[in-house]
Amino acid sequence: MENKIIFDTENSTVQQEPKKPIILLDIDDTIAAFGPFYWNLHNSVFNDTVNYLDVIDWDLDKFSKRGPEAYKLFKYPGLFRNLPPMPYAKEFVEKLREVGEVIVVSDSPSGTSYKETVNLDCINENHKIDFPHSNPADDKRAWLKEHFNFAKEDIIFTSRKELVMGQILIDDKPATYEKFKMLNRNIILIDAPYNQHIQTDWRAKDLNQALEMVYKMLEEMNELAS
Image (cartoon, rainbow, N blue to C red; front, side, top):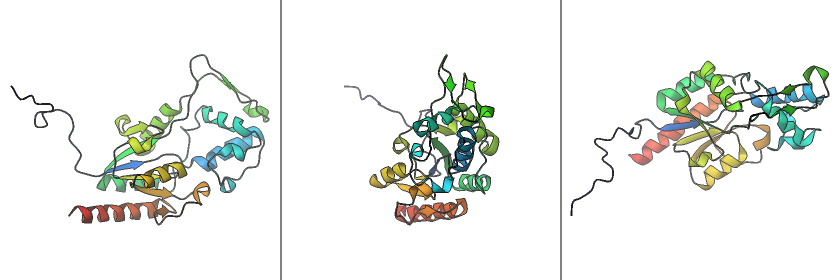
């Protein structure tokens, strides 16, 4: 019987595993200052006084006097397009690219669908708006292109980051950290008010410290491989 080649790796046009390690990188509150920007907008729209530093739980509706309506702001046009980068973010990404293949992995809040409108029912009349369309995913792509020149091929939107191949993840979300640790995968936790309950030696207070941790993780990985 003729032997069949299931997958011809020598002649395949499929890209082989990259020589550099894959570094997975979150956006919001990792390289983008989402929290302070969001809560400033929230307070202006809803006439509230929430301090970002007091938001000590991931569920932000617990801190808004509007409750779950606070999530409507995720559909605010341009919210994710106009975020300020975190301090040192550009240099951080450049340094990561020197040592790895950097892939962005991010949750993507739902935008508005066809013929859907969102009424914020604002207290502040200056923000009273019905907006017929918002697309957080495209806003994030444009933001990443502008500030870091990320190609769309290097951006993955998913709520299951643990399914994405990579040697290191840099993220702030508590549940993501816990999932990666359960799977014995490398993750650096970006410090935030809502993840203080997590005990880890891999907590980075800022992106400078995160970069040093990336170097240390890669060094340890190389030692194990040798």
